[in-house]
Structure formats: C-alpha cells, structure tokens
Image 1 (cartoon, rainbow over the protein chains, first blue to last red):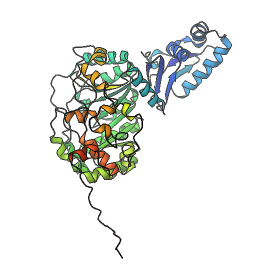
Image 2 (cartoon, helix red, strand yellow; image 1 turned 60 degrees about the horizontal axis):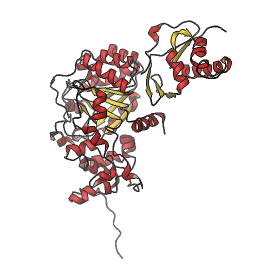
Image 3 (tube, chains in turn brown, blue; image 1 turned 120 degrees about the vertical axis):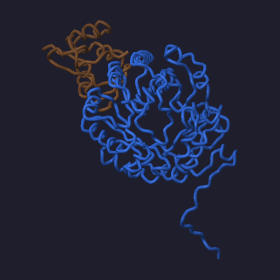
Image 4 (tube, each protein chain N blue to C red; image 1 turned 90 degrees about the vertical axis):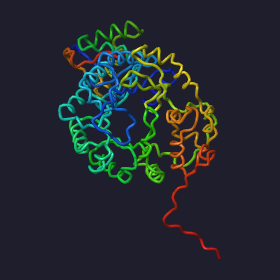
Length: 104
Length: 364
C-alpha cells in the first residue's frame, strides 16, 4: 500500500472543550466534535508523517487494536473529514503552508 | 439541538468563555445617529497587547471570536490581528461597515477563512442610509464591499437597526439582502450609550413599528418567535436569565472586560490582570453568575419570564441588573399584546394604536 499523508487544513477553526476537539469547517460551516482517538490523529496530521506511522504510533500503541482494523477506521475518518475540507490527504508529503497550527 | 448549541451549553456547564466579543477600536469613519460609542481614542490596545489577549483567550478555551468596533479597518494592523487570531484557530466573525473594503481586503478576508462578515445597512435608499451614518456615499461603498466579499466566497450578513430614521425601510433592506444572496438580521432596539448617556433613545423606534417588525418573522427572525405568552415552565425560576458572563464576555479596545457589550459592568482589565484571573475571580462576574430568574425583582413573577428577551445589561443601565429592562418589557408587550408585570406595576402600559378599521357588532 502506498504511503498516504494527511494535513490539517488552514480553513478551519478548532478548540479543545471538555476533552473533546471541536472543529468547524470554514468551507461549509459544518461542525464536528472529535473523540479522544480522532483528536490524536488530527493533532498528528502534520503533512509529513505517513498515515501508517500515525496509526501505528497514535492508535495501535495506545489502544488494544490491530493495525488492519485501526487502518480501516482511520481511512473512514480521513475520508469524512477530507470531504468537508478539514483534512487534506495526499499520496505525497504536504507542504507546511497549507496546514494549520494545532488547536489548544 | 445543533452541535453548536450543544457546544455552548457544554461551555456553560464547564464555565468556559466559549464566545468573546473583542472591540479592537472605537474609532469610526461613520457617525451613526444611534451609535452607543465614544469614538475618540483613549489609548486602545497595541497589536502586542491584543496578541497577548488572544493567546490567553485560546488557552481559556474561547472558540467563537467576534472582532468589532468602531470600524475595525480604522486600525492599520487589523489584518495582522485577524491573521494571528486565525493562526490560533479561532472561528472569527468580523463586524464592519465595509466602507474601506476593496477587492484586496475582500480577497484577504476570504484567504483567512473568516466565518462571517457582518455589514451594517440601515436602508436600501442612499439618502436614508447616508443620513444615518453621516457619511456621504456610504451605502454605495458598503454594498460594493458586500458584492466583493460574495465574489470571493465570504459569507456576509446584513445587519439593520430599527430606528425612527428608517421605519419604512426594513422590508427594502431585507429585499436587498435577498437580491445580494446574503443573510439578514434586524436589531429592533436602539440602546443607551455605554457611558449611560440616553440621548440615542431619541431615535428608538416607536411602539407600533416595533410591533410591526416583531410580528413579521421574515424581518425579525427568532426574536419574534413567540407572539403569545408561554406557560411558565416549572423550573423557569432556576434558569439563568442570560449567558453573558457565564460562557461569553466582552473586551473593549482599552482592555476592559465586561459580561457583554451591552452590559457595561467593569469586571477587570487584561492590561493589568490575566484574563483567566478576571474570568474566574472577578467579584462582578461572580455576582452576575449568581442570578437566577427567581431572583429577579418583578420579572420573576411576570407572565413573560419564559420567553422574554430581557437583557440584564439594559436592566443594569436602568439601575438594577436584577430588575426589569423596560425596553424588553416593550418588546414582550409588542410581541404578545400582554403588558409585563413591570408595566402593570408602574402603570406604564402604552396601548397599541387603534385599528384603522373597526367592526363592532350592532346590538339588536
């Protein structure tokens, strides 16, 4: 499977509230709350770390889940957020200028 | 319930200032007849001060940030402020008259992905709008700004204020918003100035105009939702009358913190104290947070208590933040035709104007 890279879009607003990440897309004003696992992936989406490495380090090592199951879940998550312009996914590393800073 | 409503409710539970209104200047290039501000610069915060405030707000959990004024573009560093706010991932709304927005400014606001730009339009007729703003050519320039922002994909809201000078133009402004493909909001109430000066009330719309606007849902939106009194909910007494100071607050260009832009109760200053120290420890904010509907003198037993738009800030300006706001009494009366407890108590029931055509059944 070729490497995939994900980066946070700059066209979003985000903040942690009570342990959950709130994200609003500036493209279509859709609003998401991410659970703990999804927040870890979103925060690790720096455009340069391969998605497979993020899954292995942030999901499999933290939770008792095998790589294949985790990858399927994360693929769905990435697809959903990409549709709303919240994450940018690419087969090549993504330059930093398109990615935003991590929310506090 | 929408996710945004869930978020604001959660912030209320956690005591987080999720929504902050920051005025970056009181200077303005318009001199609107109804404006509540003093436009002289008494030493507004520098860009460094504002960066510091924004860092603190991000750490405190603020998500929704309204940048307003005065006229925000009177600050040469306004785009630096927006850029910094967006780097910190605030959802930014900008309130402006749009007069200084040209193509480059519209493009930059789009690039910065601001959530919404609100532009004040008081009439679809230049002679009326420009007479209110006292800036010749302002309607033309504000409308041009809306078109440019739309062309760059920025969401725009037209904000109108009902007052004596534009009583017959609310439908015209609404139609203008429809033609331009933007949202529309109407504020039916002119408020006193922040220093308590009530001279602006001379242009407050008369009762019949308020009544007309509140009964037209297209014009007044959710404000006019309840045109009948609602039964008083069993637990209404335990409800907070307003979220000001609970999950939202206002910061002036001088760093003063207030519960809300309409609630001029000085609660601290971010140039002298950390924002979170003010938010958590201010005696004034703590006092505001103790208020429940059952503590409101007069209003607590009013038939409108469940549906009234009662503003504690306007009540504060009338002398008691636990007391009634007569402006909101008028709104409740205009919506429903039922006088508020305060109006009955004071004997100040303004009867609605008689109908022009009255039909009375003749007795046999």
